[in-house]
Amino acid sequence: KPQKERQRLPVVPQGIERDDFLKALAELKELLGDGNVEINDKPLRDGWYMEHPNTHDMMTILDEEEFVASAVVYPGSTEEVQQVVLWANKHRVPIFPISMGRNLGYGGAAPRVRGSVTVDLGRRMNKILDINAEDYTCLVEPGVSFYALYEALKERGLEEHMWIDTPDLGGGSVIGNTVDRGVGYTPYGDHWACHSGLEVVLPTGEVIRTGMGALPNNNTWQAFPYGFGPYSDGIFSQSNFGIVTKMGMTLMPNPGGYESFMYTFPNDDDLAQLIDIIRPLRISNILENVAQVRHVTQYIAASGHPRSKFYTGPGPVPQDVIRAAAAETPVGDHAWAYYGMAYGPAHIRAHKLALIDREFRRIPGARRIDPATLPADEYFWSRDRVARGVPDIHELRWVNWAPNGAHIAFSPVSPIRGADARRLFALGRRLHDKYGIDFFPAFCVGLREMHLIVEIVFDRDDAANKAAALACLRDLVDEAAREGYGEYRTHLVLMDQVAGTYSWNDGALMKFNERLKDALDPNGILAPGRCGIWPRRYRGRGWEM
Ligand code: ADP
Image (cartoon, rainbow, N blue to C red; front, side):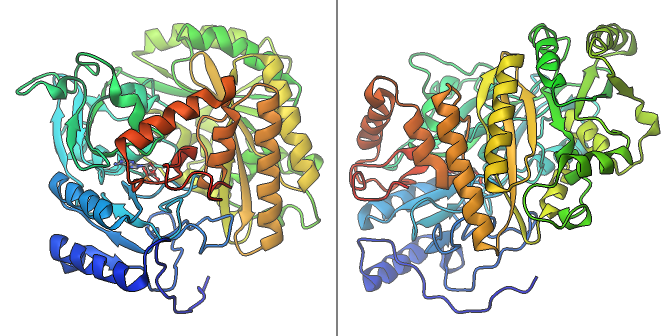
């Protein structure tokens, strides 16, 4: 779709005069080279997932000028990252580090504070520094995507030997996804739990290495994550306490075979029983990867057809219309689809699959779909690739549901209990109906908890649609929190609200985070406001939203 071709005056970060800012940028060019500092004075172009902008959120739910960068810098080394940090302190310019900025649905490449200088680490710092085929580990820079890591294994002839773990969409950065605590779908799906060792540039410019990395000449940085003393890695995820320039990651040995399976269940109300069946199977590792239970509405959207193909009336597409459409697909007129994978040689898989089959069939009407009957472009095959660590982008398809489709997620954590699933499902359905939005719930069972992932798809050129989506999200967050459910991750626009729900003992955790922030970043230059953590300079001055 053609973009609006209006010229833009570059945004200047608040609290600095335009001329001073331009002079500061000239100084940064001296340090990093002319080509590595770009002022953001061009029209904002949205592009698409693989050619995404690094200046703003291409899926913004606010005005696109709200979370926008004043400039983008491209450091080429840890030393250059340090130089950028020192420069930001000198001029009191807010900077916002991204690895690749494909964090769509959570803010993309956009900074929380308008006019921040985006530090795009990925463009030049994109090396795979090590792949260790004996220890099954690797060491990467911020610009290494899941695709790039996968390709590197292939180039080295290692793809039969070891697997990577990829999120639903494989174009993002391994570091970016991991520090934001994203997940994937092999048994190594908890990325944060699977990383080992960070190199971090602190907001005052010093560099540290965590875990065994602090021991000069160590040989176990990627093998033992803890080292000695306090385990500091945690404060560098979902935070604004440092810039990660290197990260170790574990890789999975090829399990010696794999087999995807899919079940469907007929009724909305089967959800509770299904979740209660999943819990013991998942905790005991009979179900070996993140268990995905998707509602048929999202299954229909994942076909990639626009909503208008099915329904043109106002409000959510009626469930009988969805079911009628589903009746024409392999899912039939069922309400839920389960996607899973069994790992290991055939005889080991057979044992686990038989147990799963017996348990799942306790639900009346449960059906196992034979993968051999599924066409090649069926969503099942995308799940199959992702669950064996092959990066994919099929998941983007449901964004076509709305014209100019964009998405944003509500993702509360709950116990793996039928009663909780039922409550969250009812809450989501009620609030989506209230705002006239189609409801796309998918339950993802981690190990001892599950995330409900609700993606709201909206038209980014339709102000009323955006306002309804945002109001719906805000209600979802508040009502869920009242019932004891908190988000595992969130979009820039909701960070203050979500952080505010973690308020036990008069907000003690946020007070602790603020003390850390003020100690580590006395000038408040690094990603102010990220995850609701505001430096002293910004607090109580109307920045929260
Ligand atoms: P991806 O491209 O994998 O989706 P992003 O680069 O968009 O990931 O990262 C998601 C978010 O995580 C960013 O908005 C940023 O706040 C944070 N982040 C990403 N990379 C780093 C890093 N190297 N150091 C510190 N924070 C980071």
